[in-house]
Length: 562
Image (cartoon, rainbow, N blue to C red):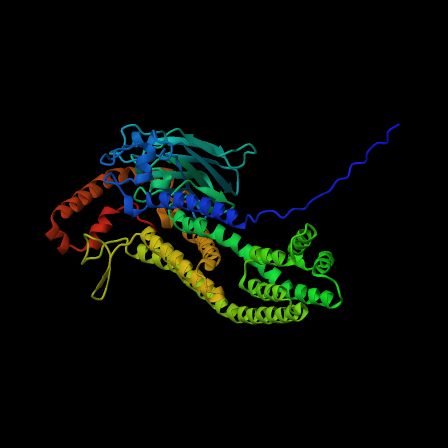
């Protein structure tokens, strides 16, 4: 009976080709492609490519608009990115009403202008209220249109257990001086209401500011974010283009640096084994089982190559090529020349080890010294970014708000006058754009300088620039890119737009008063508005008549706020 032959398995751990540069080129190629895509999105939505119809090039391309044709509301409704979504208007008194029998409040209902579309979508309104009285009492929660006609009413009793103050209006047409009233037979200790209405302005929410791409809203907790705002893609383009490759190459260099730190120990141990009478082949194979951190894989490769019959000189030269640093190349060159010359290799190994250790020590000292300067660069950028954020969030809105009305000397253009200086009306988004471009370019410059100081290469500073750009994007998106600054309609509570009046009128006297208002309002407002339009046409008269009087007439609301 024949004996079964035993199989002999030999596992060869062949050294693989170094794919570091291949991976770097692949990452760099993908980064450049994505970066160009980000820059394309940014440039097609910036001021640089605005078309004659006022739409960005991106919008005209996606919606297939003619650049010379101004799109209508119906055109925007047919485009997915421009379809108008209703904004939510919430109206409620700032403080609860107390000690009254009949109280009212006037408010304006926004909506689309007549020149936008003949067909307007319905604007539903839902109202709730709460009434507290000392004794059970009948009360009414009423809504009236600008003409004083009742459009919705709820009658309830404050002492009823199933009382649920609620009313609903299917469509609230655009208009001024709507009225919300709470009346009661008995004195109301405390009362309040809340009106919530959907309204359309004919302009998509993310296109309210000069038809620039603002992007859809993303709510993160209590934050309102616009991650697709076109400005983000300016900084994102630089980040995506440079940071991934820089980060990868920094990881490679970090690994090589760790190998260099263990290289002197490897040379010292190799010299000791040589002095002990072992050949280089046996010495390297013995050291392959030792611990050299990041150098373990390379020592194992050298040991395998020596076991396959590769000469020691070729092995160490291939090792030097794989690492590719000046320090290793310098040491291996000395060892290779001594090996070919037949000199005392142990002394050469010790000398190379001491030389490498001294070089790494000096590099460490240099890094420790430079780290303080890099910290200064980061600190200066942080201070610069903080100042810019404060200017964008506080200073610019304050100036924009103070210049909302025209001055007597510059009524046509608007602005405020300080001595001989006239401050024109400003657009917050314009300054946000300049500020964001500024912090981004500052990040590129500071990061490049940090890389140059660290190791003499601008490219290595892209990791610093990328993190600075990312930090600026986070700060601007969380703090600066708010709806009120980028021009998006604010959907929060609009109490500032409400004209409140508090009175102790009875139901009958209140009706008489509102009837008086319905007669007085057109009588006063129409001539005032006509007078204002006439003054706009007559430029010379405009310069003579005080603008404060004109503004007060155009913004007249009755009764006056108390």
